[in-house]
Length: 222
Ligand SMILES: [Zn+2]
Image (cartoon, rainbow, N blue to C red; front, side, top):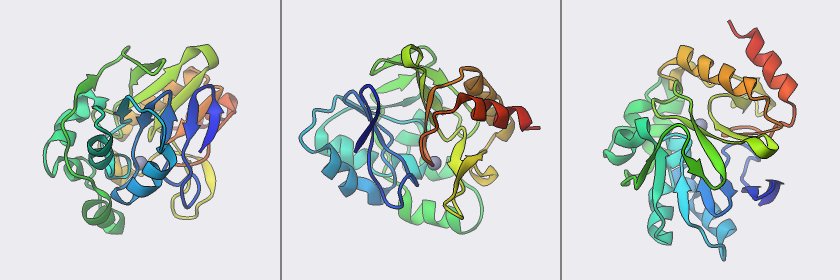
């Protein structure tokens, strides 16, 4: 686990930066796939966690949510629009339905069980010193976490900083197959770039400390 900003830690994983999990002042943000349980539990051992929050309820972010909330007896929080998916058995695969082998993996291998949501997050809510931003598109209830004081942004999958096929870093939009409303997601990306985050923490890919690069990328989108 390494500290990226005050109180913001990124858990280690393999391959590095492929599926990211963050610990933000005692709140675990995202929980990787179902196979991520042990690596998360090992790295947070001995720390006091108060809650687990999601950026969105897709199988590569909520896979270990049920296991971790149950084992640590902490509440699960997620964006209001993703609550039905998170709470309904089979709901998560419904909102991430795409095509091809990655869908098959998500449905049969990565996805975690449903789990009750203790707090549904909306625009302006506060989570561990961060402000909740509603950023729909990649999922109906996708949210980001923004800390104005040091311009730190945890942006989930609104943008990737990784090519999932080649493993090379680089800004890109999330795959269309897993983004029910790409136009809306693009609007969300534009909004985030306008914030000019000094540190951007992605769901996939290494952190980016270059607000100009994100602005340029978003400006080139159609
Ligand atoms: Zn993802």
